[in-house]
Structures are given as structure tokens and as C-alpha cells.
Length: 456
Ligand code: FCB
Image 1 (cartoon, protein in one colour):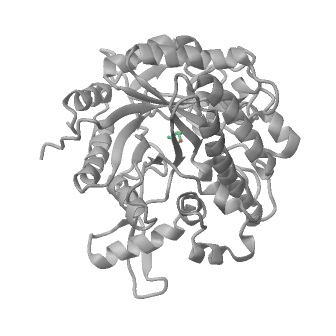
Image 2 (cartoon, rainbow, N blue to C red):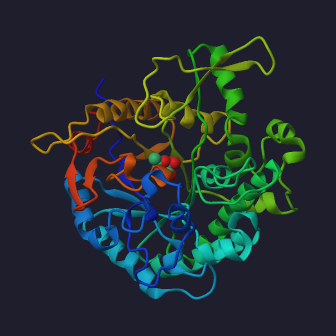
């Protein structure tokens, strides 16, 4: 099998603002919740923060050169709300907008299409202070106003917009019932219902954001949502296991409460029932706002869970990973390449949206990279991971599912949230003391895939 992809398949790489930009106090930017969270003792490994990160704010031109060298024609990055509207609402900071103008000009001059995510977790701290960020419905309105401000100003250069990245992560992993949030900024809430309320507000932000983008864009544009569904993978591909995986998909992780409302206009019914009194308050008109027409849907896929049919209610069961099951350099990063194929197929079949154009907006892995004496990083383990996941993407394309492109996470090692600089996801190695980037073997391998337009 040659694993050839269609001629118009999009090859890309992805990053996000807080993870790479640095320059935390420059150009009029004010703190985001991540500045405050990461500078609070014991929240991140080694107390790492994104204050400098990859210093991309100053080095974006040479980073774009690396993209040219790689051969990618698509770049997914995110815009920092706190650069554009430092106080969260109100005055627009034109110096902040200028940074993204320069970045986009540089991309376009090099034949690279920008795909901008409007929110990748770094909301202005001012809004945390004002009303507790996602705990308030006001956040959705402020997000939409921020969308209007930036899309009106950058829409001459960017036509591919993504609203929010991974709602489940910045809500359900940030607002904790039990005590201190482990993984992300947020505050302690008292009931599960309050956590569901934060994700409901984020869904509203997505809906209002879509409307704002379309109204503000000076040119026809594409609007997408980026989600990280819990992917249920049938243990065998027997019809019974496939049905089991499809049934489980509705309730796995937070699918029924996030991807379902966004794509179908309804929380999954069985799922909502299972929440009982912990379900969020849904006001009249909310579901219409949330359920906006989308031009594409972005899937961030890293791993999956195996499911098989069961005689017992509810008709399926999860299969635990056996002791020797392979895993990359994160506790949750099990090697489940089929998760790409099944995520795509579940959107088409379980969510019944077979026509919706899909993108893999993130896929990649952390590996324990070592620099050899010759200064090389021979990450054959990352190549092994990426090759298998891309083959699974190829299977989806070959079976006719509307997968249009793939963005590898990430262009370079960066600030991996609560894991700080301890986990490396890049295909460019970054030496954080010198900011020198060095291509890993996976960089050359990916370049070859792009050149041959196939999984090499
Ligand atoms: C995803 C995030 C991204 C990165 C990868 C490893 O959940 O969207 O920012 O941290 O995981």
C-alpha cells in the first residue's frame, strides 16, 4: 500500500500562543489566567511558566523559515486574547494586533495559509477577577466581542478561523469539585453541575463567536470548532464490538455534553439523563445559539479507549490497557492509532454528520528525546507513533470520509501546560537556554511525507 493522499490534502503543523510566544509583558499584553496559574507555587513542574517560552514573539520569522524548510503549507496557531483586549473587555490594543499582522504577512509571503484559533486556554486574568471566567455567562459575550475585534482587523489576512480549543480541557480540568484544580486555571466549585455550567458557557461562547466571526469578516471565511473527543475504539472490528464502541462514544469522557450539542444542537439524551440533577441550566434559545453551521470540524486526537460488546447493561464495556501496552511519554498517551479513524467515523455515523469536512487539528506525541554527541535527535519512536496515526487517517480518506487535512502537534517543543518544559512534543528540538531549534529525525520524516504526499 502506498498510502497516497489526495492532491489537495492539507499538511500542517500546530502551536498555541501561550505555549510558544513568551513576551508576556510586551506590546501591551496583560496577564492571562495561565500567567497567574503557572507562577503560583507547585502548579507546574519545576515551576515553569510561559513568560519566555520559545520567544516566538521575537523569533517568528525564523520559525516560519523552519516551516518553509519542512514544506508545510498550513499553520495552525492561536491568538492571545490578552494581547488583543488586555482587560478582557473594552479597549483594543493595536500593538497586540500588529504582532499577528506581521506573523500572517510573513506566513503569506512564504505561501503558508494561516489557520487561527481564537481561544487556546489563555483568557485574560481581568475576567477571572471580574466574574470568575467561564463560571459566568458574561464570558460568552465578551469572547464574541473579542472575536469581532480581531476578525475585523485580521480578516483581510486570515480566512480560516477556529473558535475554541478543547472545551472539555479548559472547563472540566480547570474547575474542580474535589479541591484544587490540577491541570488548569479555574476555581473550586461545589457541585458537578457548576462544572457543567462552565462548559455550557463555553459552548455559548462558541456559538456567539461563530456569529461574530461571520459578521465581522471582510471576506468569506471558514469557521470551525476544535474538540478532543474521547475516542472509543472497538476491540475487534466485529459488528457487535463496533456497535458497542458507537454506543459508548455518546457517554465517553464528555462527548455527549460537548461535541453532541455543538454538532447536533442537543445534549445527548441518555447522557443528559445520566447527569440528573448535575445537568447544567440551559436557557431557552441556548441550543440554537450553540448549534451554528460549521465549515469544518477539528479533531485533536492523541489516544483512545478500547471497548467491546457486553451482555450486561449498557451493552458495552471498557477494556483496560494491559500492563505491557505501549505508551509514549505522558501517563495518558497510549498508542492507539485507530483512534483517528474511529473519531472520524463516529462523527459521520454516531453524530450523523457524514457531510461535515473534518481536519485533524492536532496529533503528535511526547518522547524522551536525547541529543547525541553529534547533536542529532533520532526520535524513531515519534516516527513510529506518527506513521501509524497517519496511516489510520489515510484509511478514513480511502473509505471516503471527508478528512481534509492534518496538523502535527507540534512544530517545536514548547510549554506543555502543567508539565512545563518537561515534556517534548516538537519535531523541532528546542534548547530553552539558547532558543536554538534543531530538526529531529521526525522533522525529516514528516518533510518526506509532505513531499511525496503520502504516509512515508
Ligand atoms: C492538547 C492541547 C495542546 C497540547 C497537546 C499536547 O490537549 O490542545 O495545547 O498541549 O494537548
